Image 1 (cartoon, rainbow, N blue to C red):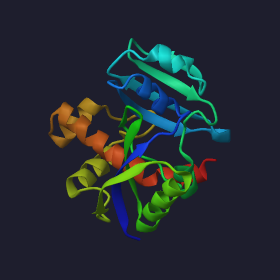
Image 2: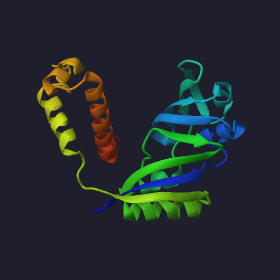
Image 3: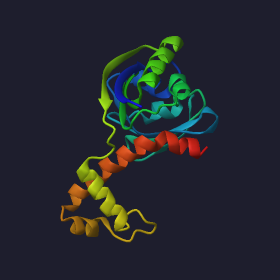
Length: 208
């Protein structure tokens, strides 16, 4: 099955907490670092912002609870209908990559899925009357990791970096691979992000 990676701009509807908050602070850049759907239409997200918007977020009717992490970083629990995942995303079964940014009510998402799901997603936005614009689309190679990433991944697995408890530290693994610790850390983050996004849907289906 051919996989495409699409970038799409979407106007978040009225009532969506991230859309409403950024429309109230049009110069703010809201960065969603992580997000996760919960049962019964609820959700959770971790975010940061270029401006102090915490009071506005906390007062939004779609927010059940806000937990600040400093002046401009926070986590939120989102009520059903408060702006978790839009209906077309849920219907098609796709999850935007994180992090992503919201500006003045508009969000730009990167999504990897089949050509058919891209078509169904765009049709779903049309059916719901949600303004959107396809920014770009490109095919994604069937290779999940580059040869170098595969080598690093195999080494990390064999040396017990992902065991619980770990059998080797990041510093020790960097010595084994003869690379700088900072370089290895960046490589592992890219590998983990690729793997997480590739298998996210399967994990959710098998962990209801």
